[in-house]
Image (tube, rainbow over all chains, first blue to last red; front, side):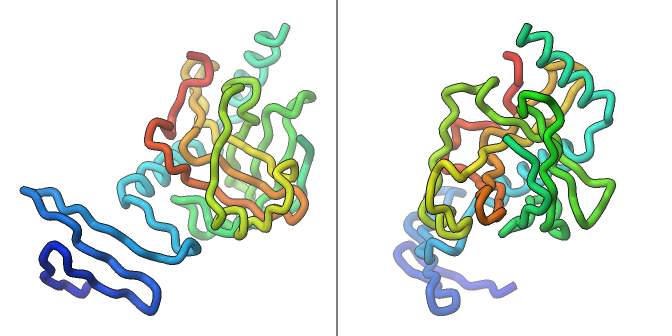
Amino acid sequence: MLVLSRRAGESVVVGDEITVTILEVRGDVVRVGIDAPRSVSVHRAELLAELASSNQGAASPPQEAVATLAEALRRRKD
Amino acid sequence: MHDLPVIELVHPLPGFPEHRRFALVQLDEDGVLCDLRSLDDPDLRFLVASPVPFFPDYAPVVGDDVVAELEIEDASDVLVLLVLTTGTSLADSTANLRAPVLVNTTTRRAAQVILDDATLSVAVPLAP
């Protein structure tokens, strides 16, 4: 990992197209601006972790659970 | 909704980096519930559902980058699917509204798209 010290208003350039700017530092919160092409997705790491965890919890549900859900749906429709 | 034998994920699902090819198989006559089955691993599948019967007002807004990646030319080609986490009943089953799976039914390109809307949760009860 490359570790750099930056002040508010200073930037780091990643590759040719991504610029990360430190906008503000207040207490233990740092506001970061990311300028990247639209093809590069930028997400909070904890959201990706939450999504991975949600997907892992959803994966390969037991057949009985699927059948129960399908039956509940049918009953709801009637 | 209909069966699609091969769907190609343009990005793997978070948590499942090795799986890119899936089949969509309808599970009920109304086409509400479907199985998203990995073509690379016969033991991996996800239960997915159309949002319409559960969340009629759900209308995900995606950026131009998603439109380009999925090669969407007509919004009517796009199938919106919610990944479900099953419980023992409808009441304790949840749907991921924050990151729907969008499928371009024409090109068979798909992705789980993270919506830029922090009010949407990854686990919303199916029957509130």
